View 1 (tube, rainbow, N blue to C red):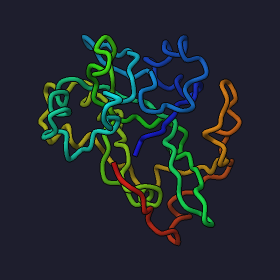
View 2 (cartoon, rainbow, N blue to C red):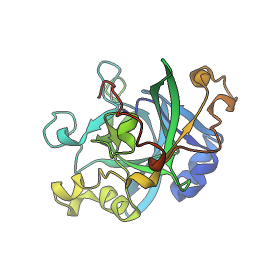
View 3 (cartoon, rainbow, N blue to C red):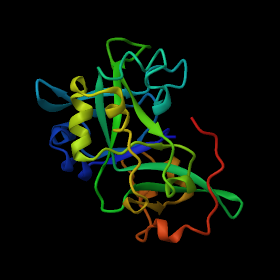
Length: 230
């Protein structure tokens, strides 16, 4: 889950801290793969800004997703949980589902066009400690996302963004509640072409989504996704 995500340049305008990041990423990042450098939102002395960080903590092991049920027990995550938090703002998460005997890719995002504000942990990138890495917090999916994958990213509300970025005054349970599953009708899925991963530098065409999305009301006849979960 969350192994391939992206943010459009125009969507970065929705978050003040990311408007400045557009100077470095003017077109956004259509694919934020593990270990790619991306901007994440942090709060320092009450002010929100961004820092560039690698998606994942090391190439030596899978570390780009931080499961909500491991945040207080994992040797890696518990040192950051409640101390070093960030928000990864995403336009979409990319998932593949089987349709007609082949894998079909979908961009899954907010139905209203807003960004997915996902809770993340921030720490030293273990392969090069002069850099930082981040991991997106994941959880059990809501009913809509379960049709595409067995895990989903947490999605913050504006109020939960404040709690997540200022974790010192919150209890562990209050912070775990920030790894929120949105309502089923908050999300939609847009079909894209199978050559999405063959996008060339500067060419967004394979990432162009179908104009009409699938919503939860369209999906009762589909079975839950049968995929490996991370």
